[in-house]
Image (tube, rainbow, N blue to C red; front, side, top):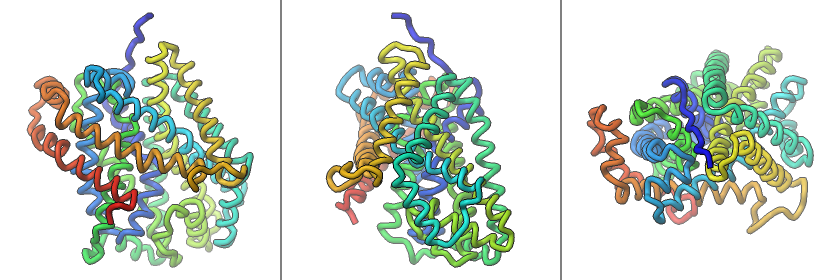
Length: 454
């Protein structure tokens, strides 16, 4: 068998933008704002940032170490790092997790495309009841969401099939700056609304009396999921890093970008919400039901601007979803390409077709086809539960335990310090966090999600 040539990112900017794109997704633009609204505003943000530093960045560095050392897909990288022992299972579980998430995540990304189309043809206007009915009809429609799921999946395929530099890196260099620009435009418009100052105050003036165990655990969980930990994305992307890439510096920069995008998303949403008196803790329905209503109400005196803001918001959301879909898709594409020794195009097509089928089934399970439920959950909710609340914490926990307690100390230190060319001043602090703090934090997240820890 011919040995496959290993690709690399072409520039440091490409490394940062592509990997930040993996981390920046719906978790930042959708989940972070409603979690902030439900958990006390500014105090949640403070705890979240601390959790990113103490949990997110060390876990990210750990995946970087395994990925760059293995210079292979996630399953093979863990296998190579552990010498083929039982720890190899972590890599396979990471690939499976990323593969399953790709399927149902594409459904949500598809909804975003439908909302772009609806904004363009003037359907994003009406009463709160209208938006609630619109989303209910869309999510249970047997055709539209499936069609959009397939479309977003094939857009992702067209990027992935072109490879690391000409596909992922080039797309990231266009999409990430565009995402930031759109964020800033919408933030600027939202912050000029009447009573916007109340939303800004909610976001940045902490009320420490609101700190509870639940708020802390919510921030801990958000920091873990927001940075794409344990999905195979970081490990796979790190396999394309050069030997000169400073893993710690890269992780810190990506953590900063991820947090800034999340906070900007809050600045985009809360000033607009407070300006029309909408409760900021609207929950998961925030982006598809509450926000279209907020934008149309907030800019009622300037309806054209309101439509434009709504359209830009869903373009922004689609870009965030697409950058994450790219990294999730690449996890499985790299796996099939290297394990089956086939071309990238064939591997990418296998992933696209299979995850599109999963996405279609998940979409249909939401109401279009009866009887598609298991253990009292729709197929969509079941995949979300298994990957988000079972697989991700297990992969993250085991990765920390392996790196902290069982991996070759020399390999970990060599990768951390770029074989002694970097000072590695924080190596022992990093190792302490990975050995003790991170596993404990992930265990708390796991137990809390299962309702075993309040």
